Length: 352
Ligand code: SAH
Image 1: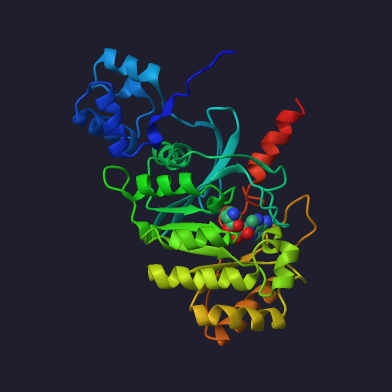
Image 2: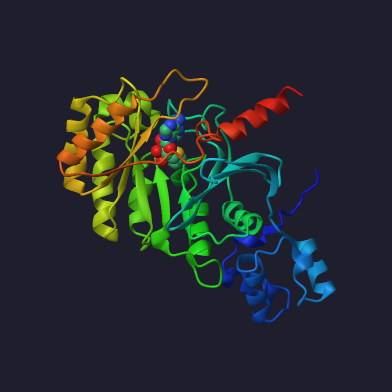
């Protein structure tokens, strides 16, 4: 049997950890700073670009460490609003997707936290093939780094709302958030970062203790336990009441208002009674509601409510004093539901 020692993934290391590594190699601490800046500030594509390091040292690094980069496989650009969808290949060959959205307030990148997902939400395309694996911190960062380099535009906002459940990949998510928002890298403000969860209660409570100022979004989608269970299998594990008290705790600990995502599904969760029940649970939390007309997925029968129903739902919710936005459909012409580009690519390949 051959035992192969696993190489360390350098881009996932904090500056402190990198300093320890350099010390192990008999190098001075400033080498760690140089490397960190090449990776997280200059967004270098490999050791060979690091021209202020000797060739010999770069060869040593190549031998001892993994330098994670993503390979762009496909880019689709919306003719309507310039939104871009990127399909990237991970070092082990799996593919993931990320989206660049251009808003007036800046550029926002939506990243994937896992390849696939095991949460099983009924209307979601990302979960159909199950979970392949969780992404490393470097693989989450690289989606942003690559998009910033390829587009030539600064990324100011990040949303962890692509494929995967970020709180099902907790350690890597925290590491990623530290590297993304800390000094010496892109240094994106924590307030400009949103993490969306289907409601993994113990990890919401854990996140509340981390002293972060990020926005947490809860995928609610239904205002009663029974209805939520029909749409989201995770609700079998955590009761709606437990999820809501975890959100209350999160808000108390962090002082940050939460966002509640509500995908409107025609004839399922779009009635007047649904509005009333939703208002009743969101009002005491002073949360913001983000309405998303469900994106039809080929394999599922769910459809969007009529435009009027969506607008009425919003107005009625506002009449209860709730802060509501309808999520603007970015890149409608390239889209299909989240995870569909990745899925169609994989299906195409498996037919080869
Ligand atoms: N796992 C996380 C983040 C990924 S999905 C979560 O559950 O929050 C980001 C958001 O898009 C979630 O609110 C998710 O429920 C929603 N979503 C997934 N598929 C959708 C679809 N077909 N139409 C509308 N919203 C969808």
